Length: 304
Image (cartoon, rainbow, N blue to C red; front, side, top):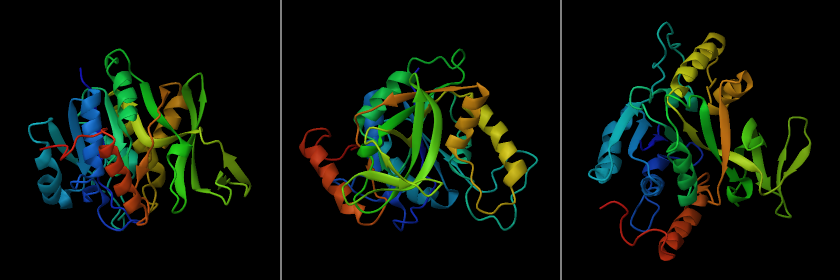
């Protein structure tokens, strides 16, 4: 059974300005998603599911889905703030989406096999998809419930020179995830050390090899059941908090602490990059051109 790739593409890039997912950054106008899908298919994934907002469905179908026809089965699912479990009603003043794990929940009817979750606007690299595909392809959904994984990027391979970033800093024991702490304003200092300020105001330094989450997760389909249960708990507590969001690490943390799931942290040599700031765009263009020149990707379009 080939795993499915579930692409979170419902967000707008507020810091970058505009719909990053449709930005042509490769030498022939390839999007970052094109590279992720190319790498995923090469690694052994067999289906792609995108979660998007309904209001840009036509643009997405014309610019994105059309190019994959004949290459891989694709499906669309939609995230909307009114897509809540039975018994819950979206507050009238709610405008913000419910977060990444709510987006994952939208895939429940489309996915029945082991699957990986990625962000649409992050470049993960071939090795990251290879290690995830190797993990997922060995799973039996009926027997391996709660056996999840996460690609742990080395933080030094995820930085930008153009400002600070937020990363889920991971703690592990015997190769399994024990904790993910979201750290904001991680940046290089004047000596090019990687630093952040913790909740007590102390300046902390991160080893460049520290694993961080870049939202590349691997799940069996039972994750949807856990997600709905935890989302209901979230709504009971925070449905009327206008900017509250239900994140993947929040749900994962609960399942780990309850003993309901394990998350194997998969090491990768891949270097992440993406357009976090407008100044990052040219750097990404240059890096992708270099990947083609080195033969990592074929000349011409990835999908003809």
